[in-house]
Length: 60
Image (cartoon, rainbow, N blue to C red; front, side):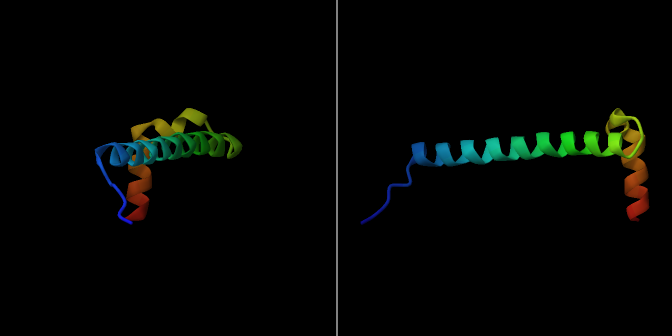
């Protein structure tokens, strides 16, 4: 028995993968906002470019 991996089937799979990636991104941002709030700083500070430059400098 051969499965039909047609265009419609692939479209459905890629749509589901897209939704999963979008939800992962949303939960990542929400987690960063909540984590910085619990850490005692401004919750929007994680979205500032200076914060990201500091993190990348720390990783070097």
